[in-house]
Image 1 (cartoon, rainbow, N blue to C red):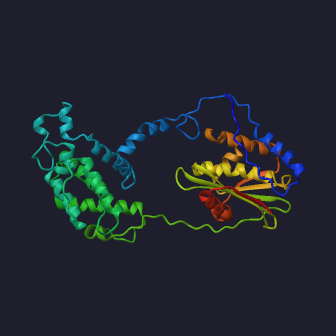
Image 2 (image 1 turned 135 degrees about the vertical axis):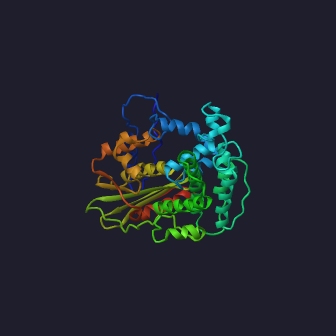
Image 3 (image 1 turned 120 degrees about the vertical axis):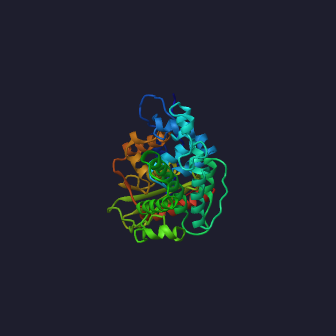
Length: 398
């Protein structure tokens, strides 16, 4: 297999014509230097190039997720994981209700009637949705939000309709969580009647559903100031701020040591993938800007853009008059800094970029890579966003 190096863009400015050819030859020689690693098989469905069972499952189920988006709604964390798994079994009709036990030959047909109404066979769809007792409970829940409801037809359609329905007031998160609480409470009530000989009390079951909803809400969101009684009488009036409060990090750009330079780079993508741009700025120990570049690179993802920005930034700096000086490279991408520091951790599709960076590291010893917060990388960030929407390349040395 022949490895073809990616083209290296050369930024030349304010150099004597006699030194231009020398610089071009030097950087071209560095860019074509590669590690003599043996060829190996690459699994293209993971970023690391290594096969994992999870990446195989995700690849096989990609079409299923696209054609059945309701499964994504199921695993959004609106209930404890155990309840999500139970709901998944209900939607698939895999719960061990009486009719399922009858089909397996474990019980007689005469004992397969619904535990709650004793009027029809206890199928999964009947027990949780079409049973007269269960249906009255669902209607009671809807009345708390001032809604009327028509049965969609099957368990999956019921779930999708409930999750897609936006209540007229209150928090949609509580409405979504109410589905899981109702389903789980009906199942526990059925088991208590069947195995412990308890009697059905519909009013008590309705209160248990709302109390369980209150406990789940208090465990998931900071609503300890809301009494549980509010969930019993006016759950639709409770508003929850489900967004996590982010603590703003206050930081600023730090000057490099005297006699050295600092290169700040960044990459931005307007989509995954989308129009992408890279940018960078060189500053000295007096905070003077010595050079900037901003370049569109087409349709890529943000990780590729961040890593390419480091590679192009190094090329830009080492073709400048200050190439022999110490350089400190900073980026707000942890992935890009990790990959630039450790060649073995680089995803397979970015190995060519890493080879070029390794060549720079070999030729120029005074080179460091540091991760910084976005607030300290404001100049490069602004240039990157401009690069994503510009149509031509821009670079300049001062």
